[in-house]
Image 1 (cartoon, chains in turn orange, blue, purple, brown):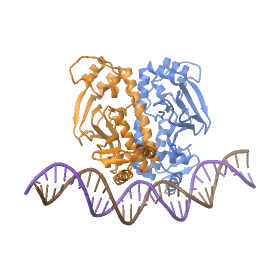
Image 2 (spheres, chains in turn blue, purple, green, cyan; image 1 turned 135 degrees about the horizontal axis):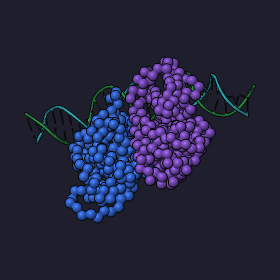
Image 3 (cartoon, chains in turn brown, cyan, yellow, purple; image 1 turned 30 degrees about the horizontal axis):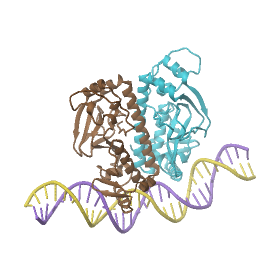
Image 4 (cartoon, helix red, strand yellow; image 1 turned 90 degrees about the vertical axis):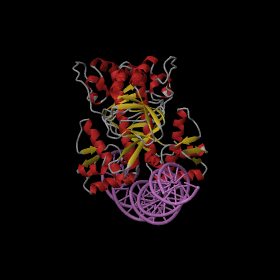
Length: 246
Length: 246
DNA sequence: CGCACACTTGAGTCGGCTCAACCCTCGTGG
DNA sequence: CCACGAGGGTTGAGCCGACTCAAGTGTGCG
């Protein structure tokens, strides 16, 4: 199925290559993404397959059940990966941001719905051509596999979170995880943007919106953080890390 | 990190190959495992690297924190993958059985402890030589990647289970999942062996042992299943499937 | 027989959920 | 400019499902 790729330490090589602007080789997220595995020539091949795409907030990229005929790389903004249970309950699998890859685990049909939270830009690759490209590039496959492994550890960490942690631990842990992910893409700051709504956070952590809201305001009152428009400012990291306690 | 590979539909090719007994080519789980990707000659190479290993119940294969210097293929029995939180809480990531691969996502150190639940046999591969072998065999890497993707979907399903389902749904769902996994390795039956203890099930589902016990006896009383020594017999699949309601 | 260990069962508690207001901000239109 | 409505977020009161704590029941093994 589909999944975010968090961001394992980028391992790219510089690529001096004169070309018209806007290409993959000038892509500012290249070194953060699987594309870091490619040489200049390979980037050209990739670029030939790619298609730029922009999403407005609330716009869907695809929906659970749609035939899975493309994979994507997020180059700007943030999207939400969610799943609807037959009885209406919703589970938010995660959030994909700059550098994340959508489509590591591809079944016949997407089993999540992906929607933009903020204005988002992506590279789209048709599934078949992309698979063919990968087939001829073991190091790209290797990179994808590496990502998949990394994803797997993240998924497992999240399982532990969901299964064995209290509401407060979940919220603290979520905020710190978001901070770390921003840091990995060079946006490290004590102020963490939260483009998703409270309901999204709740559905991600296995809580209700009321619980998330209550805990955030409590952490605010306790001066562990400061709620600001569009996010939070983490004013007492020690306290939060204590709560999240790996 | 480490992880079970459930069992995507096996896709192997028959391999007529005369050789001394006990080799990979006679391995009865080959077609269920990643080894299905290999030709006879490649199997020989693999076999040269492999090391047979047997575990008695309760015996550990390795522990959380040990340097991750090998990967494994389970050929018999069942192991438990668990993780200990700093405060003593435990989370059981899953159970690996016949055909499952341990080591898809390998960080520096194992982040789970693997212990045998029943008498277990495995193939052990040193990490480096195995990685080298894989590096020269794109179709094996491909197979591993496929598995990783499959694992990822399983992990995500389990997340949904942990985050958004009630205790009863969790238990019913767990039993059906176990049944399906047995079926995939040719042990399909309405009687499901549960070599793990109640505590293990509880730690896997994010419940307490008492809750698991209570729900099993309730389902028994309601004639949805029958508790038998070492497992359960699912006597009313419809009812259970209703409860698990994907 | 008797201990150990896994499991079951019961009574009481509590964390997080449900239900229901309420508040605030922002966009729209009169 | 203000009135208004909608949507997101907050807050409160009460409840309930799963947890905690504690005892009891097998069952296998030395």
